[in-house]
Amino acid sequence: MAKTTTRKKTTTKSKKTGNGDAKKSQTKNTGELPPAKSRLVEEESEQTNAPAADVTVAEVSSSDVARFDKDSQRRYEDVKKGGMRVADLQRMDVEELHEVASGEGIADVKNLNKHELIFQIIKARIAKAGLMYGDGVLEILPDGFGFLRSPEYSYLPCPDDIYVSPSQIRRFGLRNGHIVQGTIRPPKESEKYFALLRVDAINGEAPEKLNDITPFEDLTPLHPCERFVLETPEDPSNTEMRIVDLVAPVGKGQRGLIVAPPRTGKTVLLQKMANSIIKNYPDCKVLVLLIDERPEEVTDFRRQTPDSVEVVASTFDEQTDRHVQVADMVIEKSKRLVEFGHDVVILLDSITRLARAYNAEVPHSGKILTGGVDANALQKPKKFFGSARAIESGGSMTILATALVDTGSKMDEVIFEEFKGTGNSELHLDRRLVERRTWPAIDVGASGTRREELLLDPKELELVYRLRKVLADMNVVEAMELLRSRLTKCKTNAEFLLTMNLD
Image (cartoon, rainbow, N blue to C red):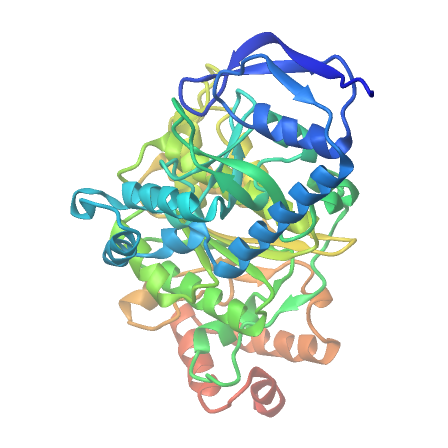
């Protein structure tokens, strides 16, 4: 008779984790298990946060393992096809969640807020199906574990976040900003959060592909040489974007500043840019980051742009550490997308307020510049802005950020002066045009793009130079009124340039 062997896992030391107040025990095998069985034990012990007791693991036959894997895979695929995703619930409003909760048989739904409703619905669905599909953007905390945050809440920590264990982060080489998808399980006793049970995809690709990805910092940056055409032929009345194409063309990987005094229409300009880019380049990832903005402006921005545009905001009533956290999440997510070869556009409003937030959060060095700016405070905002680049091997990150001027604040002037030479494109807005109710309020003479010869056709570049020479002899108001009147007579910029009479 064959002798059955058993192996014990002995508890070595415990360590506090991020999922509730429970402690996780790190265990060590005295022998080697079959790969499938080893994976099952790891998922049950390392990925949970309940106190681990001594467990006995018996040898299992290969047929048992195969049957388990087959059943698990079948249930997993059924869940994915059924659309039971956490993100779908997070997109619903409270009234829709009340209907879903009532259908799941959850009592007293009227007394629950949105996060509590989602939490109870997920628990009810997992109880029926055995598991559920979840995704989110990974934020790794200093303790080593992480959470999948939702863009629906602008990456704000909330009860329906999904816990990711340190072992999973190490095993797959996960980093801040990765979009992780997989099955989740409900919290066990003394736990607070749902936990990631199985990683199915990272940034929409198989987890194994992460081994072949080059880190963002090691990618080779180039001058932008591929252009974003902002004009939309089906909407020739969109003169704002047509003028931007003429005076300050935007390339993939551009690092552009929109220099704007208060009330000059910078927010509307960003909305039109987001709409034009997503319409002309549907595969491009567009993220809008609103820092220290009014809540009603955030709502308006979300309603004026398509659902494919991700609007992330931290309003003026939030703490400065929240401004910093949301900016870090957006830039890390964008870096991970660029590593996978995507073209990413970040529209930031505004880099001045972001620099103010970093100035409040950075440890003071004792060296204070004019206006109360710490000498080290602008290092991280510059790193954020400097991430914009075209990548030699494919992919790009474009950042178009507004910089506030003429606000009466000495600090804002210092911040603008620090960023003035860092961009490779500038678009200046002018209050004189606003006072005459002339839109867009773009100062044609002061606006421009470095190395625009890489973006424009030689014939187009020659015609644009001729146009600029004529407009340079006029004042700001006359130049914009003339340009607008001529553009409205032509359906496209190409037609305007070929038919314009500058004599």
